[in-house]
Length: 415
Image (cartoon, rainbow, N blue to C red; front, side):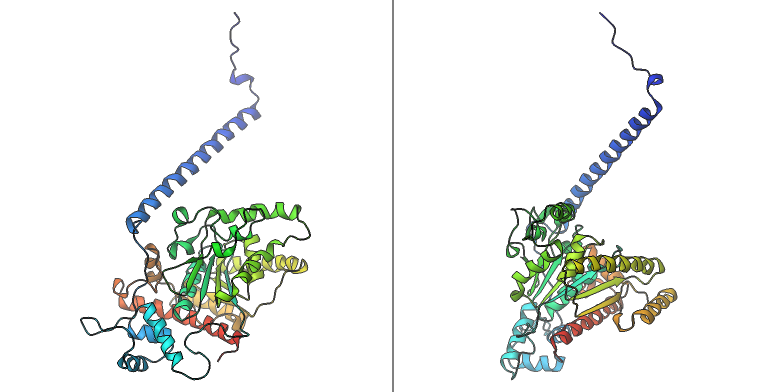
């Protein structure tokens, strides 16, 4: 019986040894990443269950008379007069009144029913006013894009518009803020990918839209499934039939199917310039680009704008629509007392002029702390923060969102 051959390292070529070592490292890296991902997902789910048990439902808080009056668009004295006439909520034990979102909606209806001329407080689109699709984007992560999208969508809903928030980011932070945890609550074919995919599993967009705990605000959630559109589009382009829609038209076509149900769509784009972002740009009637006022971020945005311009030229030549009502830059995470940031904001103002929003979103611990419990600043209770910190953050958000609301109203021809 012959002995089994013994493989000696001396007889293995050096290149083969290196390949074996690299493969071992690669395997170890894959194992580490996979195990870390599994453990992190498990711990996040456990944290989710502790913070928001399965029986818990996210709700939006009640608002003070001053906040309610601002959302309705009237003076607080006028609100007191309406309440004195028998409308609005009953006072609490301490004599104060707090207003739910539904109370605010009811008061809007009462004011419009008792007024003359066109409806003023129920702010739905009128005849001849087109759906506004605002795509919020930036190539660089950490620019405040999702924070901007979430607060803008919720603010507009509280102001009485019918709003749809679309999460195009596979990381799905916007979805989590609105109560839809991507790992737990969003299944296969339940993102917008289900409505824009290329195969027979494509769904109607009405089956994907979800209600939220904020009246007037619906959401199409996201998760990692959105990456499939980036992977499948090159294959679809190679095998495309003349009757197939191009990738850049697909989101716009889906939104057209539900256009009558909404006044404004806010799209949170992924932090990369892929097929999803280009499709969102083609569906948009307006574009909001967030930027942190630091040199590296502005340099990154410069490259982003170059690439976007080049790619949009290709899309336009292929038949894509590039007509926008407005495009603006928004300074985010701004620290007013930081000299270099103020200089950078002035630098951008000198370049972009009125395309840079007058108001900036200030950096605030109130916003970041609210995010720890997956809440927006409109949801958290003021008592959880130092009064000045909360008020400064809320005033900044309201100023930014009001400026964007004014742009939308100008597009519609409203005063």
